[in-house]
Picture 1: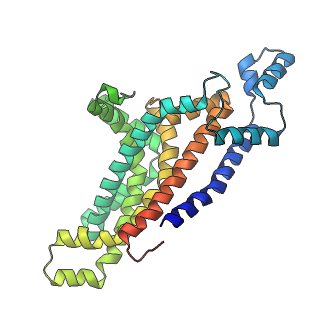
Picture 2: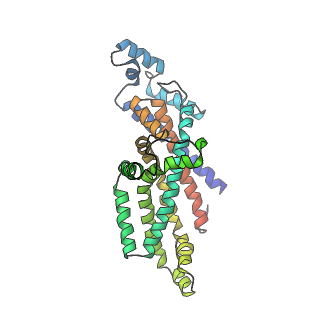
Length: 313
């Protein structure tokens, strides 16, 4: 197991290098010049050139990338081109809201998605199953930002159950913090719930036809035990796989949702940095998201052994 983990960690290095190279290249090919935004549109070409030189944007591409990569290996993501604040510090200040939002979204999605998938598989082709399927198609079809505006209108403006925008930090109270993130989490989880429920339903249907389920029922085992202890447990591998792969959906969706609900997280930081062409900040956030995605998929691979003892590393 230790050898496998080390091998997987080593294999992530080329992936992270490619992610960093991609981000570094695309940002410098994109239209717009941060030096012009800093100097202003009326600035002289000499002033713009001086700012580009001060920021190190005039150097050759390869030396710039190697210099930035070496600094990243030492934990230095550089300074923001606009605020001159360390990127690591800026990310650290915005990490908590995004982490809490993604954690709450993941919890809601997994619990509701698996429950609806199990019920749908158990009640196949019955009104309950058809209703769940229609709801999941709607969830999958509606973009997260549209779902966010719908929830804002219903839960925030009409019923006044939840705050419309803003974020309450944990030091203001756990319940208040969760209340401020519940509506964004519900909006972000809609697509994820649909994906998890459909995979769960298909896996449950497959396992309900297996001999071990028929044997359990013949022995008089309660239907709830058959569903959750036998069928669901043997459906865990595809469910865990889709949960792990869906983390990327949460990361991309958080960028949109945080701007819809004015949450000061990494998504909001990314959009602000993109609008200002703040290269170091964008590169740092992309690299962090890439590392998180790789580590989550490593954790999913390791989780397989807990659900399927036949898998050995």
